Image (cartoon, rainbow, N blue to C red; front, side, top):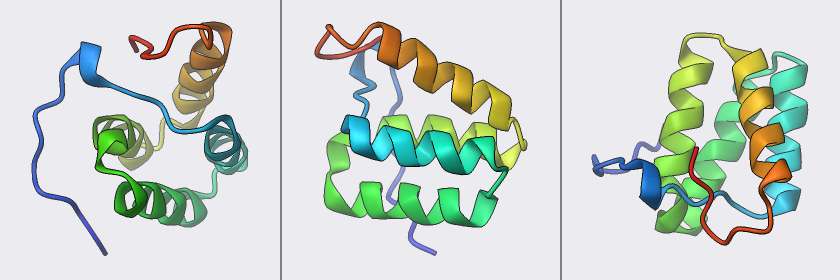
Length: 88
């Protein structure tokens, strides 16, 4: 598995990926598909390092099998989508 180097996570620096990618995260979380979710997060991390704080937060929830909380987080981001950087 690919795990990026440790990066400091601060609430103000969490930038969510595109709506398309968030939809994929949402669907895999809703289906409790840990393996599929992990692959998507890895692909996101490899594509753009700006999203690493976001993917780390999702991974932590997924590692604890808190899929409903991931869905709630995605819903919260969607509801605040007018902001460029969403505080999570």
